[in-house]
Amino acid sequence: MIRSFSRLSTRVSLPTASRAFSAEVETSWTDAWNAATENMKSNITFEESAEILRNLTKTDLLRATDLRDSPSRFFEAHRILARHAVEHGPGFWIRFTVHYNLFAGTIVAAGDEEQVSRLADYQAAGELGCFGLTEKLAGVQSGLVVQTTATYDEASDEFILDTPNEGARKNWISQGFVADKAVVLADLIVKGESKGPHAFVMDFRSSGSLVPGVKIDDMGSKTVGNDLDNAWIDFENVRLPKDSMLRRYAEIVDGEYIIKGDVRPFDMIGQRLYTGRIAVAQAALEYRRALFSKTKSYSDSKKMFAFSGEPVLSEIPQLEALYEENEERLGRLDEYVGDCEAALSEVLKEGGTPDTRLVDCIATAKVKAVEDSIEMVHRLRQEVGSFALMADAGFKHTDFLQCCKFAEGDSRILMSKIARDRLRLVEKGQDMDSEEGKQALGLAMAMKGHLVKGASKQEAWDKEWKGVYELAETVMDRVMTDGPTV
Ligand SMILES: Cc1cc2nc3c(=O)[nH]c(=O)nc-3n(C[C@H](O)[C@H](O)[C@H](O)COP(=O)(O)OP(=O)(O)OC[C@H]3O[C@@H](n4cnc5c(N)ncnc54)[C@H](O)[C@@H]3O)c2cc1C
Image (cartoon, rainbow, N blue to C red):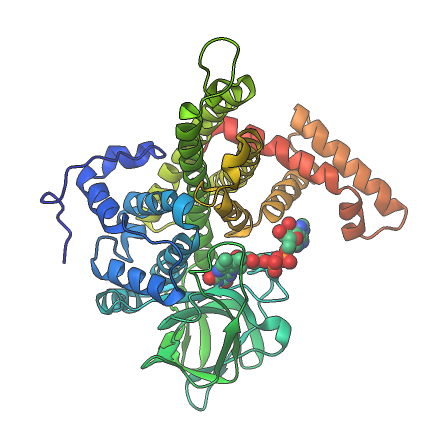
């Protein structure tokens, strides 16, 4: 398999978004990945798109374990694919990240050595995996709410995977119509007691057909990315062998549930959300960069009427100012997200978990990169006339940014958590003298005002929702200024 790239073309495409990558990874790998992915197609079927991914994984250019062993390759691969989204939409990028980050990455993070070693076999066979976390009722709160159950059956030494009600159906699962394997998050039940969400890797299809007890259907047509299959999934008493449970941090031994070490299994599964957040943040920035670049090529050559001179559209003052503003904002976000990638990569290589500071930085990176891109792309669309309507201009795929908004941590959910953590400091009487501290204290007092009038905590929170998001904005601005390293 190809792992040496020196023979390949020397066409250079140095990464723009990651200083960490350029310092560390050979350019020839980037060239090879660029070459392997440059023939992405538009308007293909989901089966054709899945076949492209099968073939791409078989080249071995990006190994399932590179996320741990060579994170810079993993992130650069995502960035290169995100650039294709302007022309071809987001379907393939989502398919790719679901397979490499969510499916394979969860096995790398939470599987033991033997389970991780199987990834090489899947890769050699071009087998694809899906990742079943989101449930219908949980929506963006997936992970917090997991109703699917995996009940340990002592008699057979197996797990029984079940969807107890319609709200617990796995929802929006990418590659649900093509995946050979699945990582499924389910509440582990042992001796009638819930042990919380755990990950199970299972055969999803056998000889091309769904395994018995698995039912799927299509989520329906989307505004973008219809080359990606999205399914809801229902499990009816599906029997899983004992070694399906990812067992690096917890296991069933002699019928008993054993936790190994001091890491909760779900915390390691949650690790995928951190790598995913960086990948999504960079995807939003890459899509925006490519769209601005394409649009600028057009406006640079679009001649305008004038009584004197020969101006082009790019020289119209509001558009010129927008291009300048975009360069400045994009540059700052590139640098910040690149710093977060570098810090997270160190943690991944050591097999650890990010500290609170890095977790906040990554959440901020994701929210800021996505929301800033949504704003700037929307403003660009308002300033370039009919070009924005043209089918091949790239604006028709802007719903990619909507996908980025709720994938791997919805903006509102991340911001709520940031504000909640800041309010906790106030409750402990910590750090209240800064402007941020005073803002947090003001919000806490406003909520208390509702509580003394008999409101519940949730009602008080809901009444002050604007203050919640304003506080989160203040914290994120400070976090961005401070950066991920002390
Ligand atoms: C193309 C695509 C591919 C996907 N692939 C996968 C996959 O492979 N595997 C997987 O597990 N999942 C996948 N998902 C699911 C995805 O990650 C989201 O979890 C899911 O789309 C949430 O959608 P929802 O409409 O149910 O959100 P809802 O929960 O209905 O939320 C709607 C909006 O309400 C707001 N909101 C909701 N709850 C709160 C709250 N408590 N506080 C504040 N605001 C709130 C948020 O702004 C949110 O955007 C995919 C989704 C899409 C669209």
